[in-house]
Amino acid sequence: MRSRFIIGIAAAGLTLTACEGLKEALTAHVDVVARAGSQELSVTRLGDLLGNAKIQVPVNRETAGLVADIWTGFQQIAYAAAHNDTLNDHKAIDAAIAPILNIQKLQRFMDSVQKTFKVDSGSEAQYNQAAGGLLGARHILIAFKNPGGTATPAEKDSVKKKADQIRAQVTSANFTQMADKYSGDPGVKQNHGNYGVFEKGAMVPQFSDATAALKPGEISQPVESQFGYHIIQRLTYPEAKNDFAAKYAEAAVRIADSSYMAGITNAANIEVKDGAAAALKTAVKDQAKHRNDKTAAATYKGGTLTIGDLLGWIETFPPNQQMAQRIPTAPDSALKPFIKQMAVQQVLLAKADSAKITIPQPDKDNMYTQVGQLVTNIWQALGVDPKQLADSAKSTPEKERLAASRADAYLDKMMAGQAQPISPPLPLRKILDTKYEASVNSAGIDRATERATRVRSSADSARTANQPKSDIPMPGAQAPGAPGAPPAAAAPAQTPPPKADTKKPDPKKP
Image (cartoon, rainbow, N blue to C red):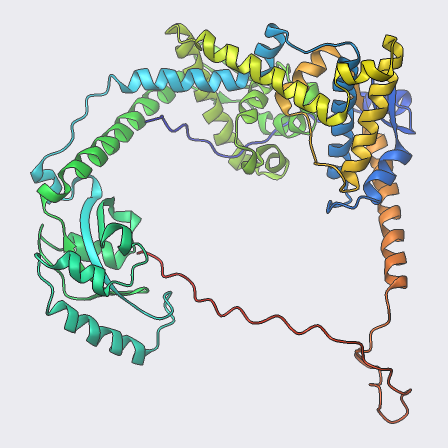
């Protein structure tokens, strides 16, 4: 079982100084949004791309920045293709995937720690006492027609009478057969009503409380929940033994793991710095700039958690959590505990290094292979594979121009909904950034967003103007045929209204 590292939400950041803002204003080319090598993305081009996009994307600064980042990534990888650079530099790859390797190290370290925990699989006495909140049961559900608390008193009475009649026939010997015959639980075909062993909180309170009140082997009278009436039998220890032993051991490991983590946290003496939340909020808005930021976010016994370290840990969060997007608006009261927890992970990583925990070379070689395959896939999608470029260009400058042009063309098609949306993932972007120059101008993003808003508004207005007028009278207007109203036009053929969805919701298990 993997250790569960407690992760909350985060944020913080260094605010830009007036000098930095002035420097950008004086040095930035106001008509340029981004640069990658000798290529430039203009305000006009980005504004038109976003404003005229056929794919469903909002016109705002965040989207403009995302498209600009995709453009720079495309141009960087196109330049690499023109120079036949497969980006197979193992040191650069190691640095780019360091956060992923760190997580793997922590998992291996915690696996080794957990092997030292002394846990048992429980006993019959502990099962009978519902130790660890673990219960074992099977049931027969006499279900309401519409589960969820909407049953009328009359329906409840009817279902209760049926449940009472069935209960009078149920014995330990025929429980499974009666469940197969009468239970409205959708899972009965697979489990014959047997839920095995479960934690008390996993079921609705009425079901859990009724099960806990039974002695092993005892069968309840019908118990009402929002799903219907349950006839419950608590499993005997021989029936539940194997399942109980496994779940009891899991619970024991969780308890031991929590105790270990609490000890580590207390011993580390972690102190979150004032302003750390604000610093992280700024950093997540321009992660490339802050990846090596040495600003201290927290200190602990024997080390420091920097803003750059925090960005590395944030990279390891699942994409669906959208951590970087949530951080800027998160309150400091939520970010400080998050930063502290990331400091705990940093402490554990140091312990993993001290324990000589490493990633096996075959695993790293597999990652190198994956990076190489990713590069090849993007080259082929953009049409800039070195072999493809060599068919139309001979000199390196010619290949650079051709590759840049094809990367631009793919972005055009992508925004027009004519090509599969792709974007170099973060580890690859980090590798590209270490080798090839690229930059995005904040002022240019603002101007491109303004232009895109005008373009989208104009396009929307044109579509509205070209739409046929509706024959449906608007509030305050005269209906066709009304006194003083113009003659009604012939009604166009109407599409039949969609049929109402009469599909009943699946009954849910308690």
